[in-house]
Amino acid sequence: MNRRRLISEFVGTALLLVAIVGSGIATSVDGSASSQLFQHAVVVGAALAALIFAFGPVSGAHLNPSVTVADAVFGGLGRRMAVGYGAAQVGGALVGVALANVMFGELVYEVATVVRAGTDMFVSEAVATFGLLVVIFGTVRFHVPRVVPVAVGAYITAAIFFTSSASFANPAVTLGRMFTGTWTGIAPAGVGYFLGGQALGTLLAISLVRYLYRPTAEQAAEVVLPHDGPINANG
Image: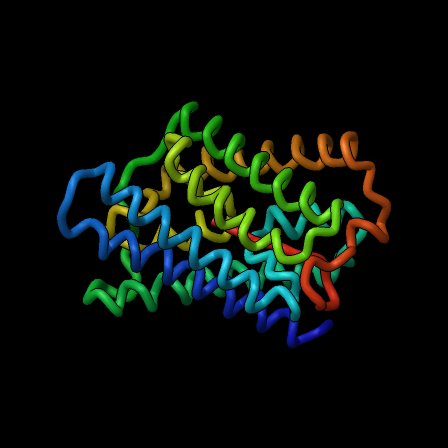
């Protein structure tokens, strides 16, 4: 198992959570709710694009178990490495949340109390995750290396606005955000809706990408940036 790639996924996901939770705390100080959400979305989208540029050459910068699962299904990643990626992403998310909490004087870990539950959240996360994976693998399929980080960052920025769930679109992010007492958190009772929606969105995206782009195992493993895995990201 390639340790460099696992460390890349761990650190990249940790920094993604720092950006998500940190910007959420910072933007909640003043201004209208819509203004706060806009600032948060821009910061997260920009940070995500930068992280893909930085870590893509090493691990593909999945930073998201849904991306890893899809890539493994398409043959770009072995089962053992996919499990390693998932563990690194969840571990990184937990560390990133702790860092963001500490930077802003919050408890290192605190069970979230913000309620995000219901059918609307389930559907929202399914749509957000579906769109994210289609953007990633659709762009990869047409071999546009430098466009992928920008496309993913732009999609997440927009999805934070056009989904009622604020587009987590990432199981590792969802689990990490259970442990912040800020408004970026998600109370444990709602996690099942988010993970279920993300799982459905992943399955639907895999089906559509296979139908539209018909990627071979070799094509699915094509890198967007020069590294030894496939590419991506997220949210």
